[in-house]
Length: 325
Ligand SMILES: C[S@@+](CC[C@H](N)C(=O)[O-])C[C@H]1O[C@@H](n2cnc3c(N)ncnc32)[C@H](O)[C@@H]1O
Image 1: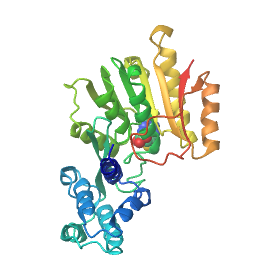
Image 2: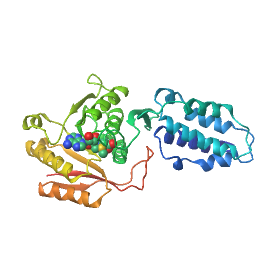
Image 3: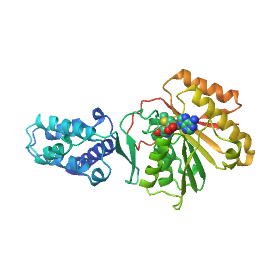
């Protein structure tokens, strides 16, 4: 392969990395800035910056599902700072793009888009603050991204199955599974009214409904309030939950619910249960394991390396466990 072809390929990969990180609103420090600076050093042409804009702020996806105003402003300011430090020609479109966001009003919510291996995006309406309206459920957490990647690597475990997700939040994992793993039926659930509303919007935004294949439902399911009657109705092959282990009180009710589900089902129809957690507080996590043990539920750790599809902090300690009776 000629050197120029190789360079073009590398540039394309770097531009893709910029696009993926921009639409997921990744930390600006995680972008491949060195590539941009290396290219601009001693190069009069600003063509690469122009291409970079087309992959981010001027991409059609940004018109439809824009990242927050603040994020776009910081992103453009960062490019301008690095561009101005070189001898490359000034680029009007860069300043035009900044002018558009400088005066724009900030909102409490924004869109984040996560690219699937097919190149299609899962676009989600999320809140800009990690915790808002008294819930942690209005943003996508790292464990959700990890389990989505794990599912993409183990699609056969979801194909043709009916799946219940507990504490779905804004829906990244479930939507990825629905779009890529061909489950038969998928039930998203949560307990918080604002989360349920956003979840419904996101499910619709991504073209899923009770009439699509898979058939999709969004249901209110509070682990502390669920009745035996409702439990009897839960007949699924697989149950998943991500980032729900962060408060011993919450995990207590989760373990009670899982224990009841396991008690209600015979060995032949017992659902497979996958819980994926970011281990932030080892004490809370071991309390959860103790609660499982006390309820007679054993677990097997399943996490390991997965194909890197989405951008997030891969140094975070994330554990995926499969529960069994
Ligand atoms: C940290 S968020 C995780 C959201 C999503 N699974 C993710 O990983 O991005 C925890 C979620 O659990 C839900 N949750 C907390 N307690 C719950 C309960 N008792 N019943 C149902 N859902 C609950 C919250 O509403 C929130 O959406």
